[in-house]
Every structure is written in C-alpha cells, then in structure tokens.
Image (cartoon, rainbow, N blue to C red; front, side, top):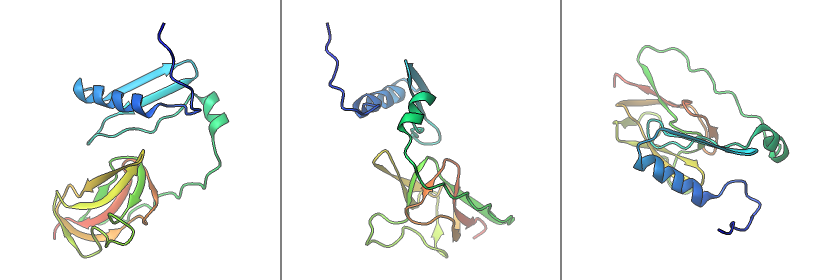
Length: 162
C-alpha cells in the first residue's frame, strides 16, 4: 500500500502542479481540469505558458478566503486610432523593473520592438518577462509597480505608427 505524503495544511502540492505543467507541455495540452472531492485544480495554457488561478470548490473557498483589498477596476483606455495596447498574458503582479533599485524596462517615449521586454509579471513566485509583441512608442504606462493585473488587462498604451 502506497503511503500518503504528510499533510502540510496546503491545499495544493506545488511539485504535483509542476508535474502537471510538464505533462501539459509534453502532450501539447491546453487545459487540465481535475477534481477530487471538494478540491479542484484547473491549469490553462494560452499565448505563452499561462497557469490560470487555482481555486478549491466553493465550500472550500469560503472557508479559506482571506479578506483582501478590492481590486481597482481598470481604467477604460480612451479611443485613439493610432493606439495599440500591450496586454497582460497572465494573472499576477506587475513589476516595471527587474529589481527595486533598477530602472524601469521602458518609460513613456521609449521605442519598443516585438521582442523588447516591457515588464515582469510575477505569478506563483515565478517572474515572467513580458515582451511588447508589437513595435511602436510607449504613450502611457497604465498600471503601477506592484499592482495586481488580470489576463488581457492593458498594461501599456503604444503609438503603433511610430
């Protein structure tokens, strides 16, 4: 009989999650949705490797929910025919620079190319470099350093004609 690993009080085992991500990549899967009693884990892969937020079943979520500050609604960008937006490819925390004492990757007025790293998004203790994905001049930074960001949220406004 196989022995169960000791219960550390954590709902999800990070080693198992990493193994699931490896299996997703190995078998070219875009989504895994697993359920066991009251627990659920869902992993999705989008534009780049993206791990969707994991959640327990509603009964477990209510017990484990901690009070948090309400998320600020994203300001709706003004319409501009020359504007394009660099959007978040994952849920996480936005960081404008590689370290607190380093300059920002980009600032208003900088020109970027598709491969230019514009920020970091931290998700599950992993810092992911986010490329611009387009060419142009940064017109505005739409989020603050340390802000939580959602998938698809505009991060930078770019003049794509520059």
